[in-house]
Image 1: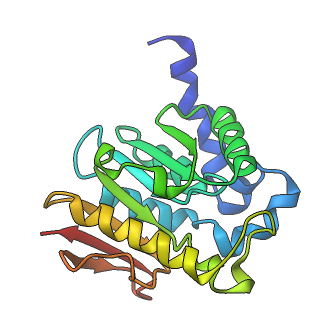
Image 2: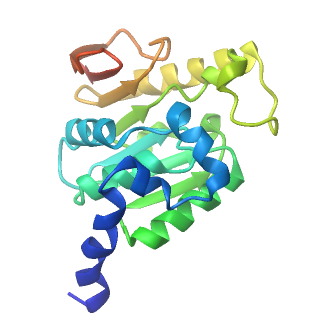
Length: 203
């Protein structure tokens, strides 16, 4: 093991001491998004533990924003590979910068629209209601993209169809979901006490 790999856990540790500490990875201009759009660390840990069904599983965060879930999950589950897809190039840039600072090697980010992503390349999935900003003005991240109910429906239908194609045993963790994107074949197998984070397995 080379020296860089030996140092990586120590480099990452300090950033995951608290949500407030983690947010220091990003410019202050992004911090206002944290309470509404970023997964809390304790939720990321619970979701990552559930999604880590087998070693080296490939886990996709559907709408990864500034990358907090992927980075936290990669830290808590170092034997898994986490991928985030995000349509805003600026947020992908911030996510990659945070990944570089933490030294985590098992997280990466894709700049693309979710409808361009082939779910067959991934084993399990995390979804923090990334499309809700299309139907609720209070949840808009910015004014740089077009919002509409049609887009919301298009994205939900695409995710639904992609998840429906996945084999039995596929795992899905949802946070603040309306559950419109979840096919009937996925059964709820657990949740947090407030039911905001739910765990699903396709049967």
